[in-house]
Amino acid sequence: MSKTNLIENKKKILIIDFGSQVTKLIARRIRELHVYCEIINIKKFNNLKNFKNIKGIILSGGPSTVTNEGFPKISKKIFSLNIPILGICYGLQLIAKLFGGKIKSNIKKREFGKAILIKKSNSILTNNFYINNKSDVWMSHQDGVVKIPKYFKVIASTKSVKFTSIEHKTKKIYGIQFHPEVTHTSRGKEILKNFAIKICKLKKNWKVPSEKNRIIKNLRLKLKDGKVICALSGGVDSSVVALLIHKAIKKNLICLMVDTGLLRKGEFKESYRIFKKKYKLNVKVINAKKLFYKRLKNISDPEKKRKIIGKSFIEVFDKEAKKIKNIRYLAQGTLYPDVIESTSATGSNTSKIKSHHNVGGLPKKMKLKLVEPLRDFFKDEVRKLGKSIGLTKKILNKHPFPGPGLAIRIIGKISENKIKILQEADDIFIKALIERNIYDNIWQAYAALLPVKTVGVMGDTRTFDYICLIRAVTSEDGMTAANYNFSNEFLNDISNKIINRVYGINRVVYDITSKPPSTIELE
Ligand code: XMP
Image (cartoon, rainbow, N blue to C red; front, side, top):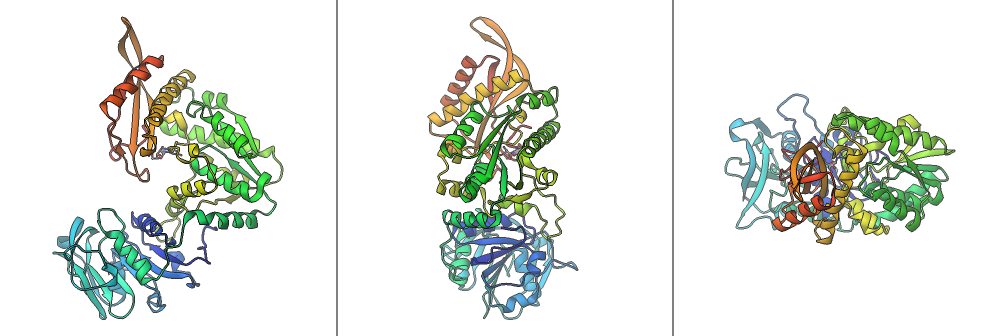
């Protein structure tokens, strides 16, 4: 579980990250095949000594060019280890270069977006990939292989680029210019499946729930009788972390729940009830509403709000934690994407480590060792893990909720009254989604309060009240999002309910923008 070490006793595909935007997607697709894989940066890979359980290597794409001096590379020795290798985009160009081929930065023949791949010869890699010897693929390259290295053959081309897919004549080394990991390559999964199962001979036996025992055992070994403290927010990640650690060390886990007063209506009480009564966790509640409201008074800048909330959270947590004796560890819900994002492609560690929403900064301040049992998992895998340890559906299927909470859903200045108004409207909206059975089809939905008042008329009386904005999006990972298409009938119903039941709102608008160009949250 340590940051630098691969899990050594697990057979895997190793993905070497050359800095592509979509490296994580390669890992997702391989894991979807129930094959275990890990991502490693080139620096760490080049220092690797033990290749025992590495059954396949994928070289990712990346922004570098092998036509420049000092391009990122792997040692040629790797090719004689008898481990199957698949190079994607930059990975293909690197293989070609290292074997003596020629690569050109050819502006005229660059390909971005959809292309048609045409079969040139049979290959296990492209089994079941073509329809009538053709397949839609997604390209994103400026450089291209212009001379194929000795001992390689072409297995597929596009109209404009001949050496789009190549294979070594005797070794299991493959290179493809297109990206099989993105959904725009319609049958891309077949390529990864052929590589993992047929070429690397890996079995489809990796399943998230079966990881639970390994995690709990490792936690026991690592923590021994050390006390662990954990900030429990009631979101999926921190809940799964707390339950896993609780299963490993029971009462030595102390959970702190800080009530910032910025959660959805009734959410804090409900989470407390679940953790205390249902799961019998050692939970301590801190009511810090007043402090948060006081510090946020008159603050309208989104970044200032975030900073105040983060800093106040750390302060409150730190103060309470100090009252508990002999704590050695701090548990955090860091996920695999955070780990990958936290080092640069070359391993130079230049990009800042992404702090997990509002507990970032705590470990340094508290001089505690970190425990991060979810750092090998993607978000949807965490949900599967949660399900396997009996986490209630209520938490398991909960939409993501931002660390700064309702503070970034009340645009501009915050007041206790505005929070109450928003909590009511949001509650009506979310309950309606649940009642209509559409909550689980949506990635994230919420109500927000806009800082403008408009004129309305209710029962012959003029009103001058706030605008409530409702937003609902579908998404795979929160990086991009599309607005959810409600029926007019549903929108009318929601608008009526909110205006009839919530004093302070006289207009409801529905946000129809996607991300990009908008973001999911408004601030
Ligand atoms: P955006 O608004 O950037 O949001 O499209 C993408 C996802 O991140 C969540 N989000 C946050 N989560 N602290 C968090 O813990 C934050 O400051 C924060 N801002 C946005 C957002 O809810 C969505 O799921």
